[in-house]
Length: 335
Image (tube, rainbow, N blue to C red; front, side, top):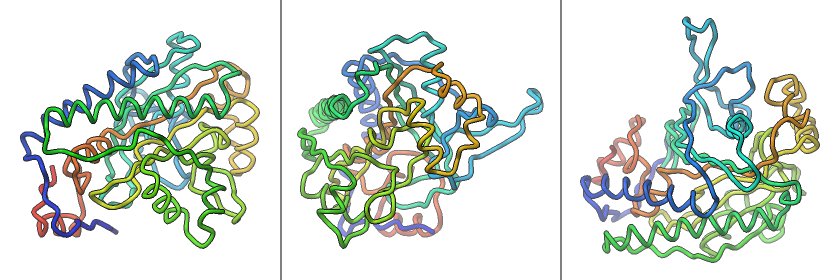
């Protein structure tokens, strides 16, 4: 069921032609800036993977991957949800060393996604992953990386606004860090999403840390698969979106599990059977590098920088009847 709502009085600031040019500018500028601040190299990545390898992202554990048979291979294939685990495997195969990493264009289909202003069944993001040392597996390193990403975002916004002066969204460069447990103490009578909204609206640019584990209210802040992020060393980057007056997630990221945290989280999530899969065996046996990584939404970044009210204004997808009707009533053109 769609939850699309176009704000009253909304009008796009860029026509279709300029929007397409601006999208290209954002993507070219940001990926170069990101590669620079994090020391990343671009690599090619798969659209689908072998489900028996355990490389696909299980997200919250309930989303169904798109699966199809490939007769020429004698196997089935799954369209990726994300490349969270594939990237770590690739760093080893491509012989990346400590302090260096990779990024790639990730395109996914999430068939069970709820449609609204921010969500589509088509997902496009920059997936990135970087080799780190054992000493880097700490909160300070995570937070330094978050600040570097925000610097790349702010630089890109300045480039785009210089070319299109009609765009004037202000972005806070200073990141406010808060844990999911601290949010409960700040807003004890609110839901997780309400806590995110209130805190992000007050602070502008936010990183919510420690997502996945059960909190003092008996629930996790949000779902997170147990086999890529370390739940004690991860989080989400959120920006305040003035067009929609809401919190706006642009990235989920974190320091990845080591053998110890993987075993602990698999047990907590009742997913210990995954330890038999190829990827998980390699990680538990110490055969994969220690890493940090995440995904940064391409359409999300374009949407907020171009001050768009719906993600369909910056990406081509398919939409339900309600979304199409709401867009038409508001004069919004979906690509």
